[in-house]
Image (cartoon, rainbow, N blue to C red; front, top):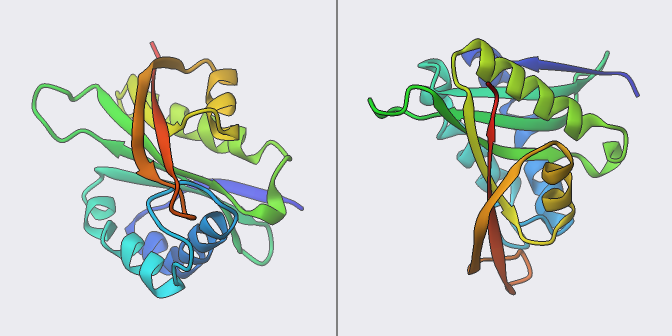
Length: 175
């Protein structure tokens, strides 16, 4: 599968929301702890993505997606979310790192993360944070990319099946 990774502007983001919604449903159906519970619908995830459209338009969120070459199906995503406060013009957060179950184990997550880090650096955002389910594949993945653990918060969120899970926070300096 040939894939293109690219940052989306506001019009392209809006045009890609249905694909992003399907990607998020796929992640939750496979047990990812990413804000939603089992049984989430495409309409619900579509609303979630749509709610971020104004922040994409004003440059405070940079969506980066992986699209299948040719067909353009969304097979991965990462959101670069910039801090809006005056005392943190150097900071951003990584969110919604998702790779479709049909496209996993091909280096796509790494490619998305490197693209996000590169874009953050280009935009003058050199300190990034993120959080993930403690002990998950994602936890190990971020560590492999040089992210530094801040700490763990027990019983932070519910997994899609309703069980409580801890969350680990990470940081990375791009300087």
